[in-house]
Image (cartoon, rainbow, N blue to C red; front, side, top):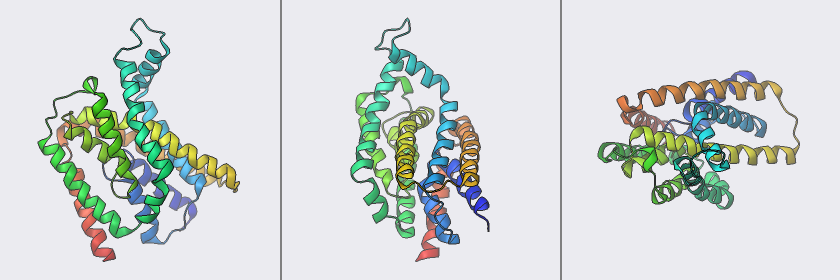
Amino acid sequence: MTNAFQSFCLALVQGMTEFLPISSSGHLVLLPYIFEWHDQGLAFDVAVHVGTLIAVIIYLRHDLIDIFVSFSGRTTKELGGADSRLGLLISIATLPALLGGLFIGPSVEALFRNPLVIAAATLFFALILMCADLFGAKSKHLSEFTLRSALIIGLAQVIAFIPGTSRSGITITAALALGYSRRSAARFSFLLSIPIILAAGGYKAIELMIVGSALDWTSFVIGISVAFVSAWIVINLFMRWIEIMGMLPFVIYRILLATWIFFLFS
């Protein structure tokens, strides 16, 4: 089994799971664990982060341009308009995860990097997601996001340091529980992913420069391109179908995955 094939599989999994409520970190821990693959290294981690980041930026380019223009003040709208307000709420919701990543992230990930923990988190948060989707009002829209909602979603995002939780899953769950529509919950989650992926990728890039290890250009290019294409396709399909299919398919998948992991590693 070649390194190129491993890189392709891992990048595909990263791209397909990064924005779905099924935990990319959990899948990326399990895949090498099951097949006994060696760690792909920091450069590959940077590559897949870059690929998924490009995908979500391209998909949300209009929202990001509106937010940037509103913040810059070069618009007929007041600076305190809806776009700049949304940008401020995203910044506020990002702070807990950034602080958590700085102080507790690595230790939590190392402590809970175990298949049975991943299975337990996958199952537990699948049930929480199901409850939020079934009983949430689903009546509020993106324009109605408040400071309180941003803080709650931001704090919920810290829980995602536990592998198997899913960053997108926990933020969508929190937004649904607060009464937002599925589409609005997913869109805010995707917007919130941009600074998080940027921070995570940037941190790993700094580590890579400090370590100064040789760059495997084959794995690097595969990582960026495969993660980008798969993430872009998944984002588009997810946002197109989310109101129709809801969260039940992902809840069922998580329950089946958790059951399989428990069976395999118990």
